[in-house]
Length: 109
Image (cartoon, rainbow, N blue to C red; front, side):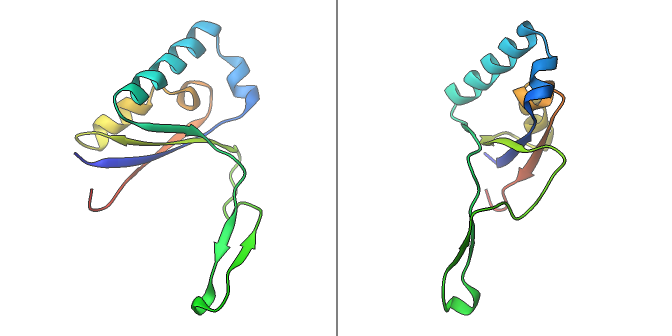
């Protein structure tokens, strides 16, 4: 089955805007995704790694990309197609809490 990487963007302000019922339903939805085999987790602090011409590793403790909203979490899910993947993440905390979820197909999966 095809795999998809999802990246959830959101902040505390958006999370606090939703009702406890919507919040609880979103977390229950993520729990069901995990129970069905998805790998779901919150984002920690990023580290950039470079090794130009394989001549020395360079590490920088910061994100490479920036966004109006911080990255809140990631998931790797399986779905029949992109439409099903979108449906699966549309009820996740970032999607319902005034954030956004990107869905990236994993090539060759």
